[in-house]
Image (cartoon, rainbow, N blue to C red; front, side):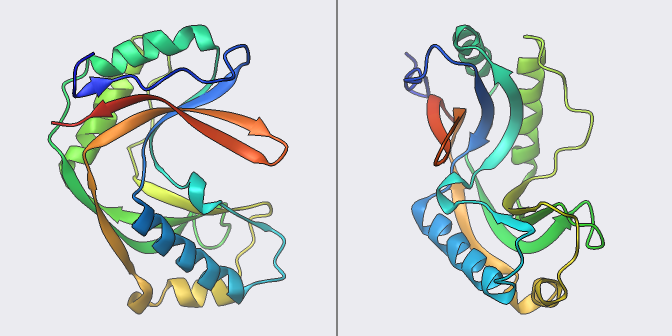
Amino acid sequence: FSPTRCPIRHSLYASFQMRAFVAIDLPDDLRSALAREQARLRALCPRNRDIRWTASESLHLTLKFLGEIGPDRVPAVIAALQSINLVAAFEVEVQGFGFFPDVRRPQVLWAGLEAPPSLGDLARQVDAALAKLGFPAESRPFTPHLTLARFRTPRADRRLLEVIENPQSARVGRFKVDEFFLFESHLLPGGADHTKAGRFRLL
């Protein structure tokens, strides 16, 4: 294999349908910093059962969600991702928090990202490469973010809003992006299990 674009391994769950996505993994120090931010925010609304917090080990920067696929499609997906014109490595800063679709009816609590155009270029190349395999092209602009929590009921929490809107709590950390991955996600009784099925290094 090319030293810059090499598959890792196929999943141990080769006989099952799986959810697949292409994403950038996070370094451990940033993952820990985000876990601290989640704990701080969670402490503001400990009795709010409408909020489902993302496990820190599952945090990642999604480039494209593929949905349910069979294991027979994995080799073609890896080949498509190996064929794209990769961008040079770049740095991303995690800063700011917000809600999708808005603060009045929140469905997702996210941490924002400041990144160079290279991140958007990479996402568009991933999208175009996989569209050739029949995966629907993205209809909305790429909006990079890290999902910290999801809301079962889209209802704003005043205490959460007050802290998130405070600019002093905006910056979390920086990290270098020099590779991305194809992930397989399997739903297990204890939660989702993410397996790296392919690694793709940037220039």
